[in-house]
Amino acid sequence: MNALTLKQLRYLDALARHRHFGRAAEACAISQPALSMQIKELEAGLGIALFERSARQIRLTRFGEDFARRARDILQQVDELGDLARAARDRLTGRLRIGVIPTIAPYLLPRLIADLGRLNPALDIHVRETVTSRLIDELADGRLDTAIVALPVSEPSLTEVALLTEAFVLVRPAADAHRPVPDSEGLRAMRLLLLEEGHCFRDQALSFCRLDHATPRELLDGSSLSTLVQMVGAGIGVTLIPEMAVPVETRSAAVSVARFAGAQPSRTVGMVWRATSPLAHQLTGIAEVVRQSALDLRAQAGAVA
Image 1 (cartoon, rainbow, N blue to C red):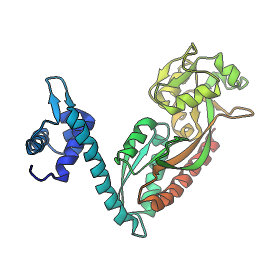
Image 2 (image 1 turned 90 degrees about the horizontal axis):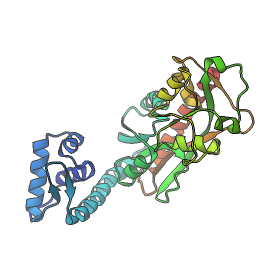
Image 3 (image 1 turned 60 degrees about the horizontal axis):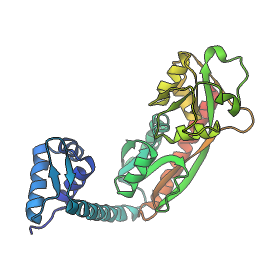
Image 4 (image 1 turned 120 degrees about the vertical axis):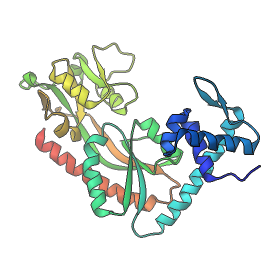
């Protein structure tokens, strides 16, 4: 068997994740023919197929599944060797891969990236925006260094650091601004607009209204908070959004914003990373920057709401 290279293992890992030569090649920043040739060379060196190929899809063979899993472990350990060297320095430098959930990313990232760039000019920040479940998987696989999510995630292999508690506000048509603010019971009788399945913010809103996924409701689901707020402005229903989203999402919609009386719905925003990460100390420092950026946003939102 010819000597394996880390480059081949990274190409294998990309193809195993994407199950598509074009998308895997794009993720690796190489041409599709070049990636295909490297995979063929790897299979030839091993003397056994890693993938089953058909006109419509590719899939890992049974051997390929085992091989890809071990390759991913090796790549993670190699990455952690680099992190170990970075951790020995006083200040974090180089690439920092941050995951952020969609109900935080558009509002926090502009301020956060500016703050991180000012305090850590040697950082090369890479951002991944997706739902919590995917961020956790990518953290576990070593494809992310840290993620900003709603806590808890309750994953034993991850360190969780709470940053702040953020309230949700009610967004309703501008014409309803004079009406009393409904409580959670009142919301149950209204057309409540929610994010589509897979977003933790949806689950948090349902919990506040004491609704479950099986409860019949008069609603429409959206793919983003922007869509929900615009639907509210069109008179379709009402929705909940987090405080930090208020300045961005309500500036171009005919809506009013109200805070709930008494117990308010809320979420805890925090950061998570692998408990074994050599960068744990540096990430704790990054978490403080995230906290301050988020607090500044909350203060701005409070002035608007």
